[in-house]
Length: 464
Image (cartoon, rainbow, N blue to C red; front, side, top):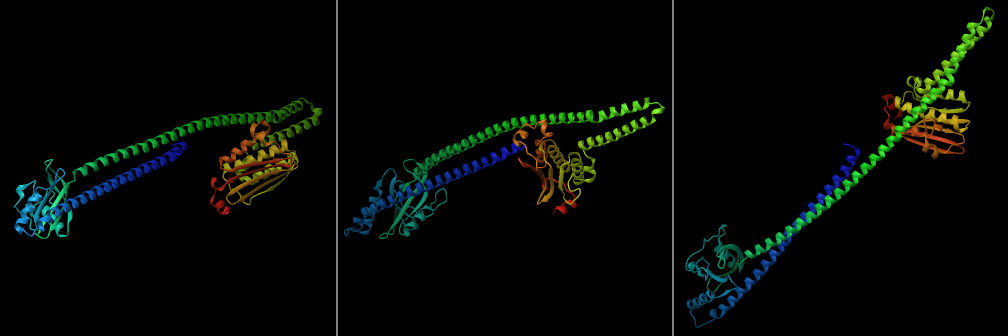
């Protein structure tokens, strides 16, 4: 998995999880609200029904009051008239009154007259609830409500009923009535269905929003990836061109040095030897002089070959380390140019691995080459140092400076391998490369972080 894909995943996955969490939270809150609304609606309706049951029972008690207070009637006559009154007293479609005594004998039941005169103390509904015992218990406490299953006269079906009972103390009767509350369940079911529809609608909106955002992020990510790929391809082409240009420039330099240096010396040696061979015995002195000249040309050629070998890759860098290699480079630079160099070293040998040593050596070599060709400087300061977790190199001259913006942009042959190449060497080690230049000189600062170096145990102790 590429870095871009990981970035896209790190962007989209938390977002999707967040949207999912929001959706679940909204769904839970909506469901909770639905349950709360249903509970409030149920409680409100039950309060209304309970209030109505108390009112109609009080009305029935008020209708019985004249009978109870009639002094001309015996108790038996009063009870007979009361039963007749309650049997014929009804309200709404299924509203009626029933009467039991405290031991469970039915005295009045207009809808189920077969119960009259029978004891129903142990009567239970299909859920096992002892209906008559519960009604009598509620009446004994001063009046109360109970829910049970009972046949609804108008429907002929067993449905849920809310019953209310209170006691007529004068006769030890329990008078009760009730209301069928199956319509409450139907209304609650309709409300629940409405809320479920809203929950589904909200969930669809949240999911749609999440999908839209995900698609938008995915499209942006793909667009970014395509753009980055184009940019990377462009940079790769530029890098390939720079590598090819660098290789061509290096080949031209080696070819020029072979032609202008070694080739001319070899031709001079050839002419000297041919002239010495053609000299007669009387010109021995001249022959010896020509041979000595050839030897000198050979020595110079050997020096030139060594220099070219050193420029391509100095073996001293691998054998004796960076500081010794830079010492040699500085010595030859001063001998060749006459420019004074002040070198500050670090007191450790073989502190860096070969790739890091090579990078810092090439930066120093290129900087001195630019000083020699372009700066008109008379003195150069080179300083190696270790600060915190950085291995640092600073090269400063007192020359005339240069146009940094132009040279970095063009990276022409004027700057050899180029300032850009020096910067790329440092970027390979996740280091830094800075140039400051003005009319009073140029300063190059290069640094490699300790984390990017492969150090020996001794070097680690030295840095610590």
